[in-house]
Length: 397
Image 1: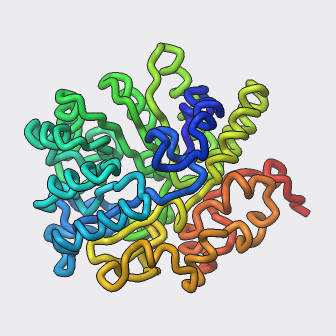
Image 2: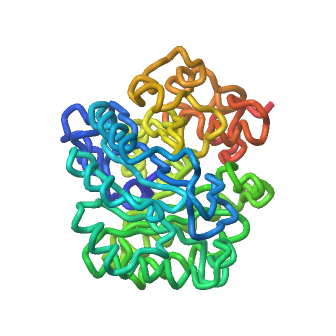
């Protein structure tokens, strides 16, 4: 997760992070969590496989009904207790569509009552005024609503006419009750030309947060491998995101703008600022070093609806164990699993240009699951890295 507004536009300074002595995840506010020193994991819990839409890029391969083996309410509460004891700072309820699970509100209430921040990732179509009010009253911290473009594009991605209108109604329903809401946009060749229009929506609706997700090849998203951006398109898109974010800041608007799932964005922003503002570039490098790059299996984890534990929500083909058999905290710290042990220290295991890269300490080898999906070798260079050999300090010869 790379904060364009934090880094490029100066919304966060190194001193903002360092004043939290120890930089423990439990002490840092949400917008600074990516700079924590202890990397206690933000947990994605896919609480159900059920969804009311049929998105073409769904990593969970969601279905219209719940899976037969979803964790029960009591099993869910036990999982949340273990999260609390382990020091998990944030629980992100996802799916499927989390609002399809009847006890979501009780789970959110329990999470907040136990001192953790609760957020949801949703398609937004089920957020009525009453649902928004209930979530606000429960102390939910944030609602992330997925949007794939303007109306025609979004409805095609979601497989449902009217999905865009319902999602935007979800946005306004959250805003009406004072519940923080933002957008999530997964980038591919099918929709990247609509990023400018998404920024227009952010400005028009005064939306305080937008996350742009680089495509990861998982679930139904594996069918979109050929729709991934070229390196040149990715560079141009990151430039556009920076340009539009800066324009909003120049207007006195300061939304939080982030890119997710491609840590090459960090060094790219640093090199960009080195030409534009060398003093700010030095501060950005310090923040990137605190961030430490990709954190799958360390600073982020996932528990699926059936209790399986994964390195992140995309790495669903390798489970480290099941919370029905062992506590999550025991599974997450058991380094007898070779993959889990290596993911917690992945910089020692990456190969090729990643191993030689001057930015390895601030990128951590980028996204391993994407490298595995395209090459069959999870330690191979991430094919989505768009930095040149010269930019990473590798001799092309």
